[in-house]
Length: 325
Image (cartoon, rainbow, N blue to C red; front, top):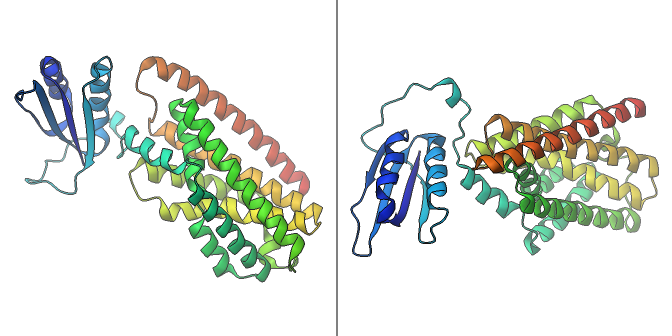
């Protein structure tokens, strides 16, 4: 459940009341104007049904400077709300609002010192685990890897047509992968590495199952975000697809193992494409998009182009996998 609270000038009260009447709120209340001529709307919604009211209010207030909408999660309410019949077009409603998803994904797309430090540390841990054939250490590296943030932010930005967030998340993801590869190259070139370690050589065994794993990882991560669920554990799944292959590429390059580096790089590329394609598909299925119809037109075009490019790349990479086996 979500509590939507909107504060606005009293000149909008009549229109806001109409929007509140049309909204599928469990309960709503509109206050009388205060001494400053401002009204407050408080409405409780089940799941993602609040999105329509939030969008309508933003459209109503877009030419007004003095307003604010706040969305808060509701743990419980009494009396218990009566269950409503879910219409067909409601089955794809998200539990989280677009604005909530944006807040979460935008924070994960930031290129910060903490992101770079966690990327460096997780790469070092992963490289040690791959070389020592220690699966527990590799899993530990995936737990601390911060790669989920920019990957999901990229797919979400494509879904809503936000070019700024798209470029920001792409820059962060590329910086993280590049930093990890450089660190792994130094490890592979300066330290004794067991290039026959099963954990390391398994990152060169590319097959169609890798495509299924990456698609499942990206889809699960996007679904958890859209459903308003914690994404920490799902982030480990995404890190499975990205961190070990990235570290393996650097280790093999540092050790002069060119063929193995190519195969690990192919696996990494396949995983990146599949994770983004699956996340973009889930966001589109859940109906996550921009607010205005003009933005929806441009965003829809961008989604189709991005999806077409990703599918094309996936077909090429699948052919490369088949030929490389």
